[in-house]
Length: 254
Length: 261
Ligand SMILES: Nc1ncnc2c1ncn2[C@@H]1O[C@H](COP(=O)(O)OP(=O)(O)O)[C@@H](O)[C@H]1O
Ligand SMILES: [Mg+2]
Image 1 (cartoon, rainbow over the protein chains, first blue to last red):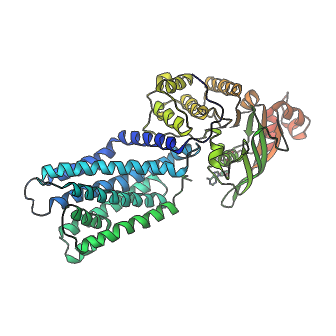
Image 2 (image 1 turned 90 degrees about the horizontal axis):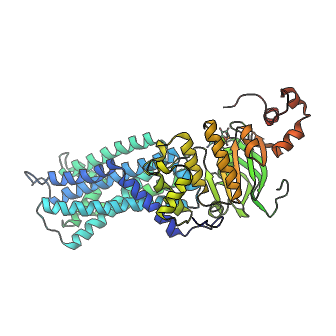
């Protein structure tokens, strides 16, 4: 073994990011519950809704709902809980005493999340088009991917806002879950329309409702008022949550 | 080896350091410096401000006042340049619970800009006496193994200055001796070490020079032998000593005998 010189300088940022990404992808691969909730559940939903009567919703709406669920679960529950745990246990402190810029630690985790959103989307659309017997054009794939990345970004920002405002992993997880349920219910009930017209309109302005409208257009539906609401609200939610999540975030748990 | 005016050779110089948490003053105008190859012990009761002092050097905490130079680099204004020269063992070390030891060594090697082959990584783990534990997670190691692994990560970059916060806390006597030998061995490689401890035995066994602090202030500094010689005749020490004056007598005389938590 040859000895490195004493006190090397700062490593190139590419090397830092490569090391972080490798570790963060390994963490993801070694967290089976995350793979199940973020990948298996949307796929099962897509396949299950292809059986029996299909006229209550378009395949595109169903796939969009499943992908919304997946990106939301990854960002608001998976990402936020992992960040809260790593902060409480001191994993961040240990990383931060190395010559690593703080932004790189977060950037690597965000890249991992975005890449998994892409994987989930491709799988979801491929499985969906087979199960529901629809054929999508390549530009629809691209549009759906774009919407997924937007949605993943919005829910990551939401998750970041939660860990920015709350300290303990238990409260981060609890608030994430409650918010998750409220958002998914408002989105689903709105798109099915069982609670009346005013609720459907209201739901179009909520994060899940806004995102499913965008998915619908990406899958080929015509642009509507709901799409306009979605195109406005998704970036607004993302920017507001990102601001809160960065402004109030603390690296240490005390 | 410099007390007083910082010399060019100082690996670390801390000057007028003040750390506050809200209205609580944890470090209150602390100054000291460490020369090349020196093993320096920071001694003080619980809550004396040892970890807070290290946190500023490590860039985890911003000070209310004071300067910290690591090898001439301003650790407060240019933290990354300072951190590239530091090897750190935190008092409560924690590593990603999902990763095995090999993966952790690969991660930290990358963060210090070291290119280690798979064999290189296994050699380091072997050297730390953890060869059989390679694939295990940090959490499943024994206390002594965890400390050895933390020390391995701290030595990975072959740093100019190593910061060890209570490295032998909670270890049995065998593991403690073994760790002292490793710390001694690191001196041979030319780096300096700043360690904190409660153990006078440890301070006497491994430190060239110590500083006794309490309430964030420096009470005394010098080699263990010089401190004993200096305070031998002090009435507070004479009252405490049972027979031969020890470093512990000096420590308790200076920091008081009340219990801290
Ligand atoms: N993050 C923190 N927030 C508030 N008070 C703190 C924090 N860290 C340490 N303290 C307080 O500062 C003082 C010094 O603590 P510390 O530096 O950990 O001492 P030591 O390491 O010598 O035991 C203690 O009174 C401790 O309670
Ligand atoms: Mg401490």
